Image (cartoon, rainbow over all chains, first blue to last red; front, side):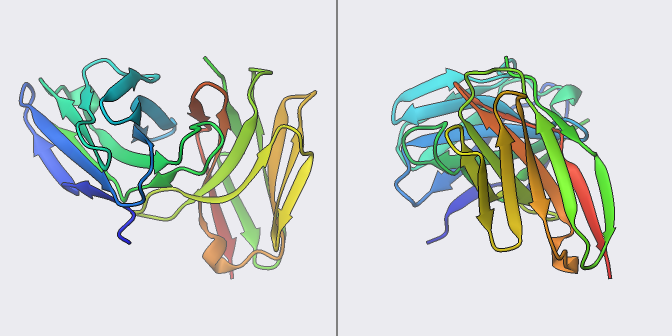
Length: 114
Length: 109
């Protein structure tokens, strides 16, 4: 099993450009999450999904959109990138019961917005 | 939302010594408290977790203690080894996951 994979690994965007980060998991997990990690701030939840076709806002959702069209994929979109969105983005997945089960993390995507 | 504080932010210990990292939280309804280890360039990985109905849990050299009354929990690593060097995050889960700001642990050979 590959576990949780993220595409791309690195990306540089100019302010105002758009992009989509792709997360895929092969563990048949119901729940999926997107986090951002900034120095000194730990991981902060952006959006999450409790199943195919459903999404919900996390702690810092502004400027991002997500979609969960297939159970194994969770997409994070930036419609108009801003320098404040420079960060490392992590996707995670877990079995149902998001607050009670281990989250499995992907390797991260390092995004720089200039 | 939840307020999770983690201390210390950096910690250096000699190989073989113990390391202790502490987290406090604010929401008394939180019921799941995992600890994650993050190595350079990788995603976090769960190393131990504890639920609100348990006071202590141990797994070989790693243990976690929880004091629900005081709203704090701690990670204890005994007989530290160089491969324990990493960033450690606590997390608190109620309606959502909230992570601490991380502790960079360095084990000096």
